[in-house]
Length: 394
Image 1 (cartoon, helix red, strand yellow):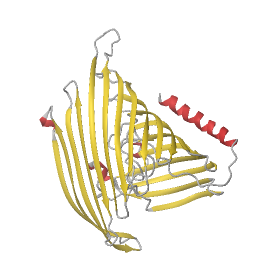
Image 2 (image 1 turned 45 degrees about the vertical axis):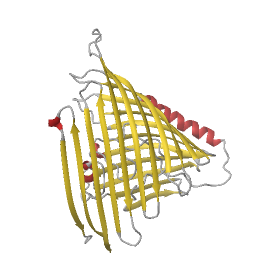
Image 3 (image 1 turned 60 degrees about the horizontal axis):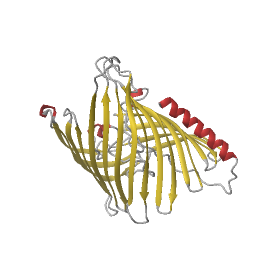
Image 4 (image 1 turned 120 degrees about the vertical axis):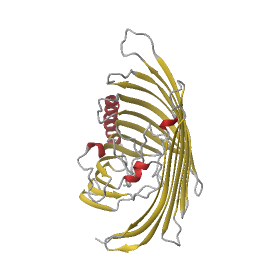
């Protein structure tokens, strides 16, 4: 399925080149912004949301290696750094420190078609970037995007390492590879986007796990009015199946449905995002022996709710962040019934700049609670409080 979607991406790009060649641009326009995309298995944030995600980081260092013509071909390196104290719903993300990437962009036909490719590595140690050359810490992606009249469109392929955590944009589900096609159009204050995705996990080829492929399509409707919150709703439907099952695993296949809403608001000093999703899956496990007819069907319901807040008072050199999420997962066979709660808050005080960088004082707390209602011994909870002083001396 992934191979088929990649082929569609190539055909889609060639079709754009052919059709755009017959269009005569009236006047030069700047290329559209960074391509946004979604992961169908990421339930924390609703998919199909265009535009920069609130709180996206900017590179602390950037170097242009090549610039041919008027951005006809640009190659540059970027370095992103995310402090350990940044508020997040997952404790592992709080460990990610540095990300080094090489980004190549080419405006093929003005605004009608722009190609983009990126190779990125990150590490839990911003000083050494120990993840370099490690495929588990690697992101590889390439695609094309463009705009014509009221339409925006794009296609992308990406491969995400098992331990890669994106510090420069939307959250990406690790250990997967695949592609996406999307088309978007504005109708006044409304924006409609449709998308088709095909992703397969277990990129690391762990022999003890099967490969799961998810093919999914859906649509998002958002309403944006100046000075008002951005409201969006989405629905997606797809299928999922396993392959390369190791001994002891039964082949699985079934359907997945997701629906959700999101509310985003950004003011001068603060921004917030509230999202709610509900996912329903109906998966059937079949015997590995095709001559055996017995099979089992499991239905799983997963509602989730998350809220994020950032506050940056203009009169004080401080930033306050808070994040909370709750997810409940329950299966019809009674083997799964869990409640997961993640809470975190942080405050970063800017102590001024030196010629080497920013000096900051940070403090915060994180609470992660996993309640297993089927097996109470599997429940866990951890609470952490920290203080960090960073002095840029060299």
